[in-house]
Every structure is written in C-alpha cells, then in structure tokens.
Image (cartoon, rainbow over all chains, first blue to last red; front, side, top):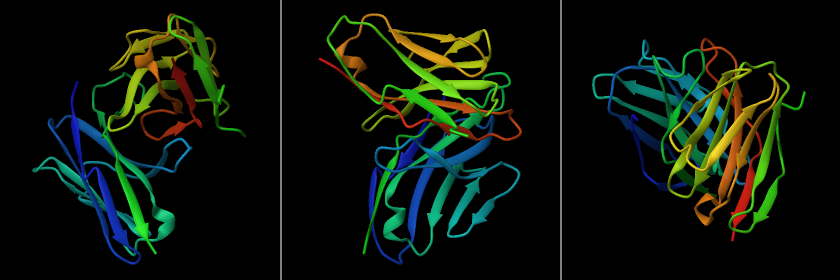
Length: 116
Length: 113
C-alpha cells in the first residue's frame, strides 16, 4: 500500500500566525489530494482539495500548495484563529484505486492548537 | 437530510464478544467505507463498497466482516472482539470520482476489555 508521510505531528501557533502542515508521498499515480479537518468528538470533514494539474488552490484563509516534482503538498492556514484548532489530515487518491470509488489513504494527522 | 449516521455512539465489549456497527447514508451515494482511527495512526481503511452487493478489503481487514445490505446501509461486524480492536470507527460515503469528497459519520467509540 502506498504511504503518505505527514508532518508535524503537532503544531502550536499564535493567533494571527501562519500554520503550515506538510505531506509527502512515494508514487506519482495519484489524482486527488484532499485535506480533512476534524474537531474533537466529530468525524472528519473535507476542508479543501487539489488536483495535480494545478500548483496552488486557495479558499479563504486556507491554501494548498502542490509540488508535483517533489511529491509534496502542504496546507497553509493564514491568520490562524483559535477556532481552527483541530486535527488535520492529508489524503491521497490513487488513479487506479478502488474502481469507481473515492478510495483514499490518509496521513497520520496533525494536531493544531492556535493560542489566543 | 441527516447525511451519514452511525449507531451506537459508544460500546464496551468483553474479549470474544461479537457486535455489529451500523451505518446509513441518505445522500444516494454509491460508495461506502469503514475506517478505524487510532492515536498517531490516522484513519485506516478496513473495508469499502463500490455499490450494493460488492465489498473489498482495505488496509486492515483482519478480524472484521462487512455487509452492504442495500444502497443506504453498510454494516461492520466484529465476530470475536479483541483488545486490539479498541478504536474509534468511522463510516463514510462518497458519490462518483468526479466529486471526490467523502462524507463521514460521527463515529463509534469501541472499547474491548
């Protein structure tokens, strides 16, 4: 099974600062790179996603940067807020995985704490 | 529109007991998934189903069985629970590959003693 490496494991950022979470993968046969956000006691929810034909996608304060040659993608949270405190997971979808499904492999997660 | 629902929310089992975790979605999605979440290990796929009547193994299928009862429901069964199966279990569903997003349920926290 392909692996994705996520770092850091935990992150503390001051309110208003920039949070950066990185993921690296080992194979190029992926076609969808989402980030999920999970609050304590809840299921994960899609935050933002990118496809490999673009290098950056921005939605509000959240940006994905994608470096295809380096096999890395990262999540940037600008002007981080206490309400952003959550666990963040990167994920990958293989081009030929799971037939018609959206089968994903997830990173190990980053626990973000934004201090007021 | 409830999205993805899971029952029960919490369960405590003794080693060797069996139980079934229930999942249902009302979004008319074809694909459904079962994950387990353990500290430091992220979300690991147990089984998934592309459509009613089909199921496939994920990364960690040992000790589990699944049933795709109909398009809405996808259940996960532990035949003989072990302490290593103590975890939080999430069910998810998704539409076709063009949309990509998986929608998750609220989870079931299972403890096996």
